[in-house]
Image (cartoon, rainbow over all chains, first blue to last red; front, side, top):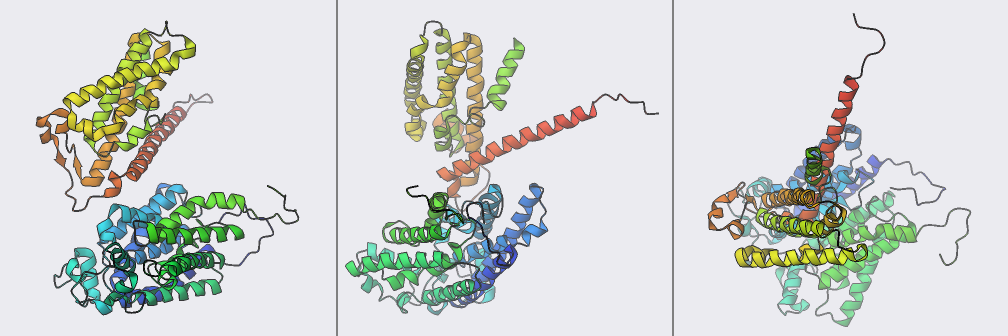
Length: 354
Length: 231
């Protein structure tokens, strides 16, 4: 975090970077557990791959830069990046996908800018966008929630699927993606969006088995788990309330307006808040202390910007979920936001009409 | 005089390379380097225009009034670009279609007008032509390196579609280096060009730094010993 623009007095909260990062990982555990229970064990394999790649690439670059390796690995920032990327990509995506993504996040997005504290963009989200643009097919191969899967998958199958793109019994990923009704399934956001394009209204689309819980089987619980983890981070003062509240608030407000105008074609606020990556992004990704705004007022603007962008992209854009793009775009605006929201220096008056 | 030509060659090919050091003409450089063939096509076209314009600008340098030299240079360059464009339209039609707007855009390539202004308008014809050749080759080399990098990463081949540039015999040139199941789209898309360009520049700087360090070490060793002798 840069203290150049924050004015003194600074209060020290007695937490080291390494403790903060470790808390983020701990807070992510419930959601990871829910995700592996509801969506299959693939996510654990991805996590393992991502963490190993992140440590390896971090160590490699630090070695090339003639820096001490172990102390910098121990700040756990690479671990957090790996975890956030691994939970965002489809659980049964091929193994090289997460390896390429994590290596890109650590080497290109973080270390080439100067390492932790200097990166302009959120490494995990930049890598996610890279993967989404470079491998659109693999990045949209989400399996249906385990309750709807036609073929149940064990932990060993997860390993087979990630490395071979087929389960140990030889079922291809395309077959695995079939739901109980034999239809290939996408995420709720994707399905609702495709249905809208095909001329269905949303209430019609919600009749599909995928939406039994109102916002999609499993996705509601997953978002609740991320929310719980986020509240833990708030309670531990690892993050502050401004960014998550402004992200969720602006997204809810925008979707409330749109939904009350036309509920047939616009997602309800509940659907927006509890589907896709909303809670994960609001509490874990947008609050990244390095790439987010550093001033109190600036964080609110930053969060509102993300919320509005997500609403706009989800409603009018080409991709079903939008948090990666919204966070990256907001990251770009951060220097400007920070410049215009510099806090009053202690003991000085605010100059009018600056 | 030969020393001078050697200096021109290193300037154009390495130490003052239009692509890597002056960072001129980045628009076509980044836009068309998705395959080696496209890169080679644009590299040759730029080289021809650069050669022609430097020759003519140098030939007329004593008659051009200083105040209106830039429009005249642009006029000269534009005529050569038009000639090259028509030639490509006639002989390498597929490549002409593939490069599209970037052939006429050679007019706005700052590397060309930069050489006309900085070198050709002040030097005789022969050095100007040599300078154009070296600068053009340097630019083409960067295009080729970037094109090869992107094509290799993106689709695992080299010289894909070379027949569009060199005629049907060139189909044999196509090398499939890696059999990729999935194209790495990013390398073929514009972001790949920017990242690749950044890596190329970083690589050049790293080589330069290493060379400099080596030289320093060398001079340290060759220092004459002035105090006493080793027995």
